[in-house]
Length: 268
Image 1: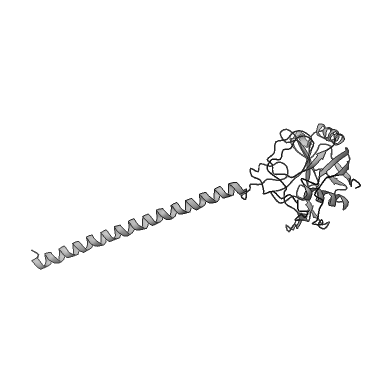
Image 2: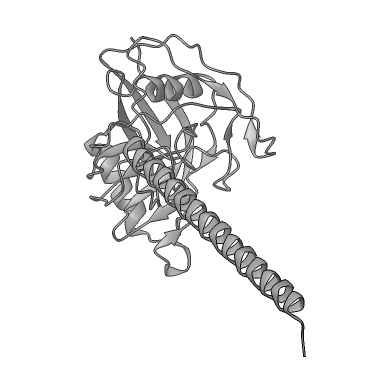
């Protein structure tokens, strides 16, 4: 039989344990509340980031060349101040051809002509120096350097995307010069028959590859529209397209190889 003293001591120990459990429960509740507040704050920040990213288009999803599924566009870079940001390509790819870098100062008004003499016939181009000054200046520079001479048009597509893609001396789809420049888009670009546009591997990677649209094509507005193709050039493209694609595919090398023999800039 426990004494009164022992009963009092047991009661005190029981009370002490109750108080300790209550304190532990209170600390746990405070900790859970803090975690809840922190999670809410983090989710709010993440949501804000997604909203901002969606507006600014800084979180781009890119694809290669002119077969894109990109759902966002880069900020406008129009070269309207007369200068263009041609930057060295630091990828170290062995498919690049070094022809230097174009001058930063470029024409920003009017148009200029560029004729591609190809194995399938001539393709006349009009470059839009007002709306795509950097891309136009780059194509003129590369033509003057002989960059396009004796190079293949390595890709032909049909269906929803109907283009002939050229401008890669290596013929691999990964080649170009040793520089890049910003994509020049506003977000309202369309690609109907007769459009000349720059291919890219993501925003800001425009270089030398371009595509010639021979039938209205559905693309996100992520490709710099450089200019237009003349009627004789479209007839040449129609003949190339009619010859088909290797293996009867809808995307691949032209069944009849196409080579750019020379690229000549119109006299001023």
